[in-house]
Image (tube, rainbow, N blue to C red; front, side, top):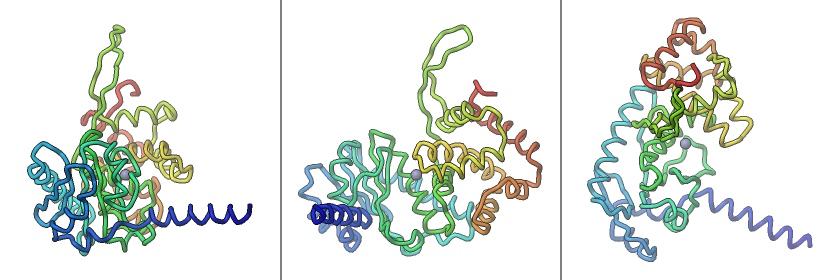
Length: 312
Ligand SMILES: [Zn+2]
């Protein structure tokens, strides 16, 4: 019995270790389209290898893959520039290699991610696969994966993680998630049923982050910035993916606010240097007290349609 247990434990460990490293040969042949095509031929998808400005994409989308890749690369390069502005001490680039895997459906990704990248599909809305056993700063090979049917803009969010890993040393999960959301050049919306004061129900597109902020406020109706920041950091310890998602969505809006006030770089710098985030840092960055920050922030949320209407 003990031997069986040991064998099971050993195979689980080997499986985990296999998940923690990337498939390397495609990176070793980054410029060799013929090799990559040959290697992926056994996968029963109509995969095309597209290279644009030195960036490699593997995709089976039907609608003009070259044009789609060009469009996404435009967004990604603008994101690099934006990241340099937000975090000017960054090392962006260097020897990072990224292969983008962009499939038609999440179901295809679930089925073939292992074969293409060497790792499983970690999440329905895009994921990265990299050498997870290495320190974030030392990782140089990334597969950025997303599916057309579940929101292809997730590509940008995942690129945010790559940039964060490379440039920030402290980087707890809450910071990584919130910043990846804040610097992605898109603002997702979701469609919800909304009941108007006269009782009629209609479907409305609502900004995703404001919706999440509304859910946060259902639990914590007494809105204040200090409590929000404590909640965000606690989400990291509770280790619930839902808590981390909601907390980072709420902080993402604060980061967007700081970015518009040209204070995000300073804020991230101070958080990284002190390895903590608190109200004092926010007050020092903005040069205001909490009450004033709260009032200005609410004003900004309202002006940018981020205010969940039912909560203020
Ligand atoms: Zn993420």
